[in-house]
Picture 1 (cartoon, rainbow, N blue to C red):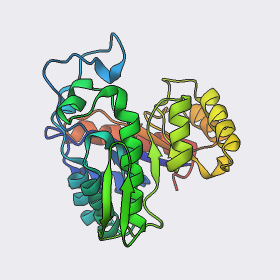
Picture 2: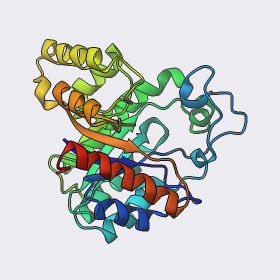
Picture 3: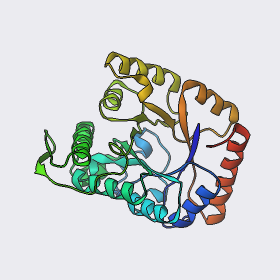
Length: 287
């Protein structure tokens, strides 16, 4: 099992270069950054899209652009994998996003994993011209057109939401055929259909869903679609800090656990990193 760290890279917390160095020094496999382009002040969408959610922390609207932050880490680390957790693909231009992903993967020597998600903030989506009910279909087409741009010398795509006439785009990713794509979303038939069609892994939030049932359902759906379930890597975010719970995740086939930190001063963040490192040490070798 591999262990990584996820945290919003906000302007009032430990900055990315120092954060990446601290994560790598403690032997973690990867660092992951979420994203929100902005948060509309109307706050009509509750935290995480769940009714009755708590107030939204301000680092949701104070965070750096994740690919810029991860590029800074790529330049100042050597082995640390870089992940987005998650990129809100429906809200982004897929042609530019494909180039960002390919550029960062190339610059980092193939260390990028692209975590993707549908998003929950309806007002944020609308500012990007995305209707909440269309976000899944839009994400699907944007991922598919990015795969064309990454893997073909002359790429094209024609869908309901994206249209690309034959085009050239470089660089191509170092990772072959492209960086792994992992879906950060809750379980369900539509999510599983997308994972099976165009993703390399599933990365739900630990403790929010019936994980064991979800894994079983995903494996059945993959087998029914003639895809080998073992080709879908399992990970969790907000990972537990109990060695027993980690052992149970390993038994379920989870291969990556991300500990989620709360942004704060350098001292606060380092203390959380050390606490997570102690958990990993009690569990076993993080490599």
